[in-house]
Length: 147
Image 1 (cartoon, rainbow, N blue to C red):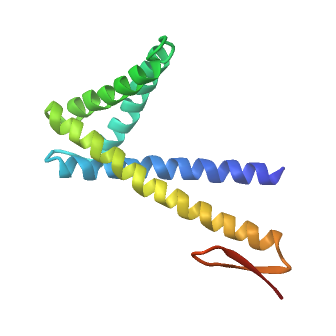
Image 2 (image 1 turned 30 degrees about the vertical axis):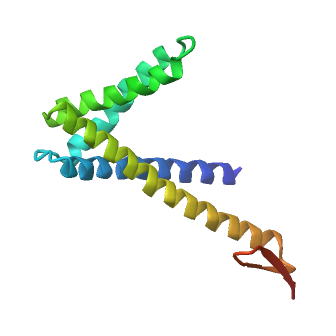
């Protein structure tokens, strides 16, 4: 039962770290987009309020027949842009640029970290489960060598 609590605690810690890291990416994207008055606190507000408004709109529009998912996606992006406009007091296109750049930064960097972490966990579990064999990975394939 302790393992469940440990996994839950680690998941919560990773979620909080991801939230704070995404705020850093919003701040970086705002600076790249040319928003001068951007702050980390403002980025946290954008992340929280944008998520709340985006979630509410997605919940409402997601049930629309035929194109509900597409409407939810567009509404989520527009709500993030509008919140960015009001928090950072900027134009629509700078807020749109900030939203797009922050989304790409988050997807690539956190996705890459997730991939590297998953590869590391896979290697550890593989070495624990296969104690009698050593796996040598090559570009061509995987070859097992007996000890």
